[in-house]
Image (cartoon, rainbow, N blue to C red; front, top):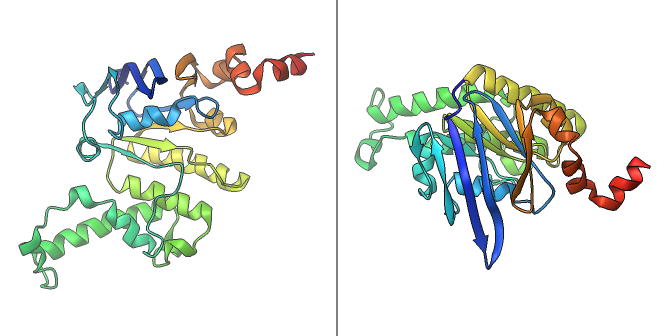
Length: 265
């Protein structure tokens, strides 16, 4: 494993005088699962927004595979091999699962307008490219067990299935680094358990490095190699899941001083 796969160094950003991130630093091994935890408003999603280009930090650096990507536009960062999901589902509800997943292939489409007009001619470049993209999507459908949802409109599917489809659309970009923003949010316990298996399968089968934001500590414990806890935009502690979960400052951030004192008494 190489520590310079993703390096975040002194990341700082403010909104209207409020410091959302204050010198946040961490490094991620290739092909590992690294989780960021913290209470609501701690700055977790702001880190993601800086990494994938939605926000430009005030200071600090983001290095991906030895190349600085700080401040690049989202489409350029996607082409570098970084994909993400969002806490709130961002799918096209009146399109099928297959159509939503095919949209995730957009950065790999090389067919232009003129060559695309030959799509219906068997053996054309456009037709051959369409076949290749569909083969990639079919592999994702098999990996996430979405066969029954393939031709159904996404808006009619259960919430847990929609979360998997959003995960699948991110995988369709063929990322090397996958950012998952609270993937288990809104899922029941059975769906959460299945999610941990799928995340491990994604890591093992596709060799993808995963950066995860998650409130469910059982999910974090079950799949994370390392965990970073933050609060008020500042790092609290980084380490293996058990160390971080039992850290007094982490417990205080989640429970508050009064609740922590009650629990100890």
